[in-house]
Image 1 (cartoon, one colour):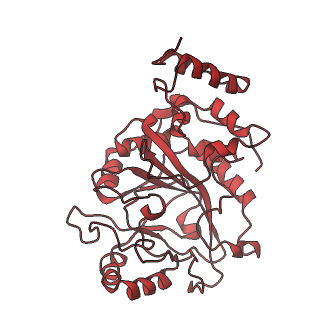
Image 2: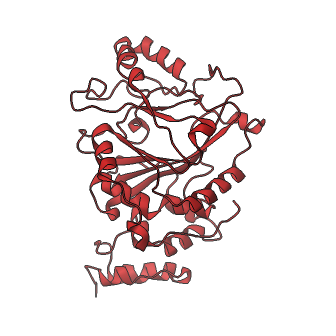
Image 3: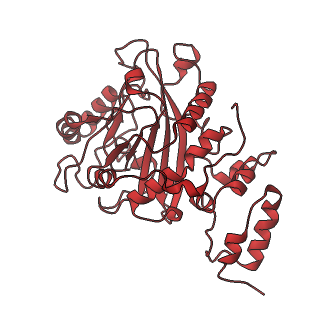
Amino acid sequence: MPDSSIAFVPSQQLSDARLSQTHIHSWREQGFALVHDLLPQSLLVELKHDALHHYPAPGTEAARSYNDFSSGQSLVFPSRSAAFNAVTLHPALLQAAADLLDIAVMELRLTQSDLWPKYGSPDSQTDSDHEDDNSDQRMHCDYPNHSLVHPPQWDQPEAVEMIVYLNNYEECEGATAVVPRSGPEDPAYPWPIVQTPGVGDLAYINDRRKAEAHIAEQDPQGGAFRAQHLYPREMVAEYQFGSALLYRHDTWHRGRPVKPDTLRLVQNLTFTKAGREWLTPAHTGWSWSMYEPDKFMEKLIAQATVEQRTVLGFPAPGHDYWTAYTIAAVEARYASHGMDMSPYRLNARHFAT
């Protein structure tokens, strides 16, 4: 990456951008909200520059290997891109997730931050030979590969998923399609959600045509449900550069094809409620990132705000982890990186003697 320095947005900017009540209501009732102005444009321009430096140009031989979703763990948090890390823990995103879940920012936990490329096929007829091809994605809910269990009832959401777009829709298309929920009796949102790839005997297949053929064979009733209630009702989220699509683990959605020979870039993030151990991280743990000789992750932790550290799982001020002994020990670990331990010292509940 061009810039591997540590960079965060100060916590005092937390209130600069907040979701409207309309956005919050849409997310809680319909399952999604598309927001255009949460993040500063200058930061997103820097992030796109880093992403273009990382991924091959569209139309090249190297680009043809990218037909599945995710970065293949090549551009995930913590990243050598300062802009990527700044977006991941940006106060506006943290506040948005907290507002949607109706909790405090420090009750959030980060479980995913991954910058994905999606390349348009040279052939506009995206009838792939590969089941894992992500060009024309099948309708699905995300919970099977984020949770060990099943989402609770609709009015008790546990997680917020975000897609931050680094292109304009007119430039490359590839918008996410969502199925809005229209109330507790909506036939598109039955309980439990078992008509999605990866649940029960249904295989994880990305390609829409192959996935629907598989579901129709394995579960004809489920296939009929999907054909009747999901695809006819999908709405396309026509994003702008910097737009954020906020949705849920139990929202029906899918990725649509990108224009031929174009590259769509998005940063995908997930924030969950603290204490939900069944909602597992999508990447190698943050602690494993400390196994680097330049102490990159330690410096990131030391320079983060209290809120940002807590979202990563660092014990919050006032947590019963903090005693005179543990404060001294953590200070010894991070002092050379400039970490201020005063918030933990002032709020420590137990001081062992």
